[in-house]
Length: 139
Image (cartoon, rainbow, N blue to C red; front, side, top):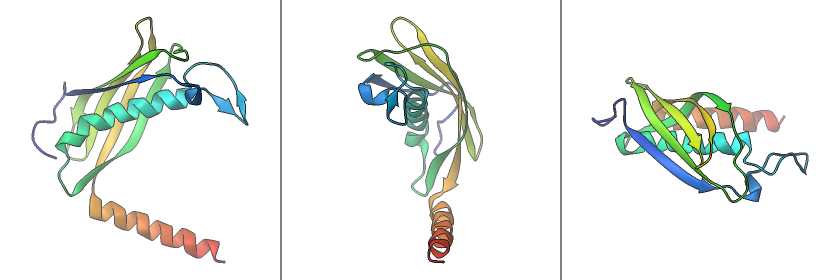
């Protein structure tokens, strides 16, 4: 990691809720609001924005853990601001508090942990796993 990533570093993403962000199971819309899955996606994206400027050329980050509460709705057409605030940095991990809010309410809050990997090593692990899956599917 490059120098400078420390607790207090923030990043954010703002999105407008669209119909494709609704919770849909088996083709049926459950509610006309932002789904938990969509909310978590943008929380993770905000957390990733925290680490990107600090990754070395040979490094990559990956989600490791997430602890989120979806506490309020965001309706179609509503703007949601996602914010990640770095709270902890170690050699291999970065933890951020994450928030989703609108002009009217808090939508979600929690924490998101990312692990920092060597790109070459992680790509090798992925390739080895893919090879196992390919071999299994040929049986």
